Every structure is written in structure tokens, then in C-alpha cells.
Length: 147
Image 1 (cartoon, rainbow, N blue to C red):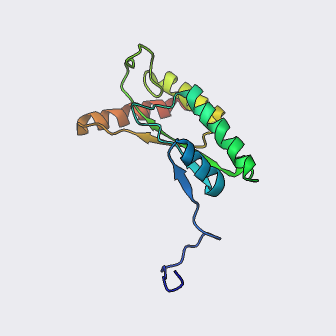
Image 2 (image 1 turned 30 degrees about the vertical axis):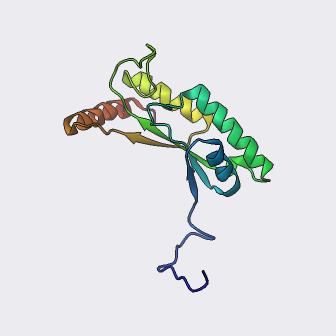
Image 3 (image 1 turned 90 degrees about the horizontal axis):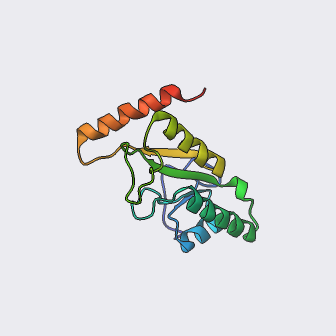
């Protein structure tokens, strides 16, 4: 690859941050070995990564990172937070990031306590009007957010 050039050169040294996505065992190993950040795929309805499951994965990532001789505190932890309408999941429990502004703020605080420093809110819907409504509901959440 000596003849391959990349221009313009990145300004970050030694390279741009490398974020590893996914929450499979292989993705955790890659993040532990090579990553500057970890972004699990938590918006998949089949694998929501509720706080207990997220904590289990994050504990494993920290263990693997230490085994690589790296400090797990240097990893940036991200989570994609799908903003849902009020309502219950199939099992009858409230889904994270749904419900009242106070409930959503509690969810944000829960993931922050687990170690998430970057939340990506997802307002997507099949209907543009519904996406806009979700953004408006999130604005109400942010009005109640401290600081």
C-alpha cells in the first residue's frame, strides 16, 4: 500500500478516532483491541440493549480492553437512542426513550451512569409527519433537562 495516497491528510494524530460498531463478541474484541470508541447497534428492535444487557456488554468490553493492556476509560461509549412514542413494548414494559419527558430524562441518566457519553437520538419514522412530532416531543424533553 506504499503507493496509495490519501489527500488531504487527516488533522487528527496519529489518525482519526476509530469507532467500532456492533455488539457481537467479535465487535467487542475489535473495539477492545483497536477502538477509540464503541457504538453498539442498540436501535435494532430485535436487540434493544436495555440497561441490564448494555451493562453486561460494557463490562465485557472493559474486561477485554484491560486484557489488551489498554485503559477502558479511554474509550468513548456511544448509544443510538430511538425516540419512541408513548406505549409499551410487546412484553408490556415501557421501552427506553419512550413515555413522558421525565421518563426519557431518566433513561438518559441511566445510560450515562452506565458509561455512555454520546447519545445519538433517532427520530426516524416511515411517516415524515411522525418524525417531526418525535422531534417536537424531544424538544419538550430538552426543556426539562438540567443545565
